[in-house]
Image (cartoon, rainbow, N blue to C red):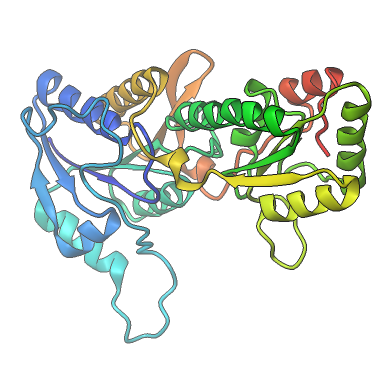
Length: 336
C-alpha cells in the first residue's frame, strides 16, 4: 500500500513521535510505502509530497514541532464565489493521481472535521488526535496535553517563590479557549489557590474574598491560574483582567504572567512520546486491516478507535463534577 501522512493545525509536542510511529510500523512491519505531505492539507492541493524512509525518520522521537510543517488550510470551507478554486475536487484529483491508498491526518478538532469530510468524499482516511488542549472528543487523552501541563506546572512552581518573596498575588494565564483542561490539571498540580476555567462561571467578589481570607490565615500570597478563554469585559486578556479586578477588590499588589506559546513548543514528555508511538502504530494497524474513516483514541488504558462521524464537530469539555474539581473544592481551592 501507498499511504500519505500530514499534520494540520497548531504545532504540538509529540507530532514527530506520531509520524515516526506510523511510518516505522508501516515500513518495517507491513512493507508499505509512506509519503509525507507538507504543510497540512495545503500540500494535497499543491502536490507537495516527499517519500519518507527509515533514514528520514531518525531522531524524531524527542523532537518538537513537525518535520512535515503545518498550516490551517481548510479545503472544505465554503467558497466566497463560484469562480473560486474548487479545493475539495482538486484535492481528490491529486490524491488519485498520486496513487495514495490512504491519508493519515494528525491534528485537532478542525483536522478531525476535515478528515471526516474527506472520508465522506470517498477517501480512505485514518486520523490521530493532536492537541495540547485535550479537547478532542472521543479520546480520554491526546498527546501534547501532558507536555503542556508539565510546562505550565513548572511555571506555576517558579511563581510560588516570587509570590512568597514579595507577598503578592500572581495570576498566570495558560492556554485553553473553550476547554480548561490545562488550567485545571496544572493549577491543581502546581498548588493554585484559585483556578478559573471557561466551563465554570466565576464571581470576582468570591475570588477577592478567597484571597483576603488566606491573608487572615497567615498566607500572604496567592496563586491564581486562569485559562485564556474565561469571560472578561471589553475584550481584555484573561490574566490582565483578573489581575486588575483582584487588585481593585483586595488592594493587594497583583502581577500577571501569560505563558503563551511556550506551552506548545519543545520536546514531548516521556508519557507523550509513548502515547504518540502507540497511537501512530495503531493508525497503521487500522490501515492494514482496512478500517478507514476512524480516529485513533485512548480509552482507559487501551488504544482503540472511534468513527470520525462521531468525533467531527464535538468538543470534550471539563465537567463541573470532575473529580479534580470536587477534590479541589474540598481542600478550599476557589473555582470562581
